[in-house]
Image 1 (tube, protein in one colour):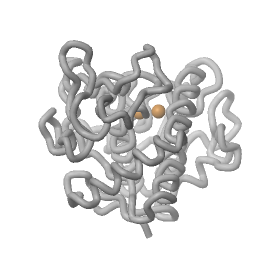
Image 2 (cartoon, helix red, strand yellow):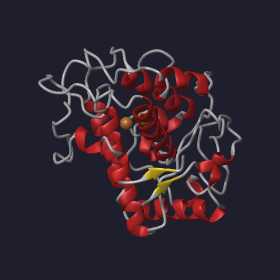
Image 3 (cartoon, rainbow, N blue to C red):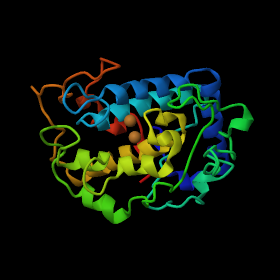
Image 4 (tube, protein in one colour):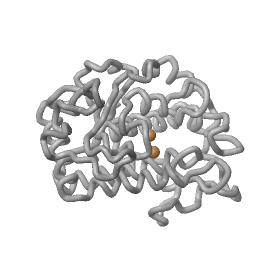
Length: 273
Ligand code: CU1
Ligand code: CU1
C-alpha cells in the first residue's frame, strides 16, 4: 500500500524521484491536461448552478479523485513515488526546506515574480507554462505576498472540530466542515494557502505550480483526520439535491465515480500518521 508522507521528512532521493517524475509527466505533455481540467472546473463551478470541484460538498471527493489520477500517472513513471503533503501549519515560512533548490524552488523575483531557483525555474527549459491565465510562460510565486500568514494549527483544529460535513445551501455560503476547510468562511484554510503562495497558485490554473499537489494532499489528509474524529458524521447531502453531487451521484469529468466511492482513502493509499 502506498504511503503518503510529510514532505519535511522526505529523503534527498525521495525528493529527487518526485521532482523527476513530475518533470517527465510535463515533458510528455500529460501534466498540462491536469491544469486544463482544473481550470475548466474553476471556471464552471457556480454558487447558483452546477458545481462539482469547488464551492460544493464534492470539493473533497473531487480533489481526492483528481490527486489519485495524478499520483497514478507519476507512479507509471516511477512506481516508488507517492504524493507528499505540505503541513503549512508547521512549515510556514518562505525559507522552509519545501522551497529549496533541491525540491520546489523558492519565491519569485520582485520584478515579475518569476521563480528563478530549483527544478521549475523557467531557465531550465523544463517548466514552461502552457495553460496560462496571463500569457506569461514562467512559473510565478509571491510567497507571503498577500500579507496574511498561513493558517495555524489552532485554526485547523477549530475547523476539524465541526461535526457536520456540509449544510444547505451547499455552496460557498454554507456553514460546516467542508466550507470552512475549503475556506470561503471563517478562518479560511484552503483558499488562504493558495493566496499565500501567489502567482499561478492564486488562479484557476493553480496546478501549474507543483506545490498545488502537496497543498491538496494535506487538505485530503485533513478530511481523513476529520473522518477519524467524527466517525458517525456522514458525507452530505445524501440525495435529491439540485446542482450538487449527492453521496451516490457520479462526478464529472470521470462520470464513473461517486463521493461514496471516495470516502475510504485507505482503499488507495495511507498517510504516514
Ligand atoms: Cu481545485
Ligand atoms: Cu485548491
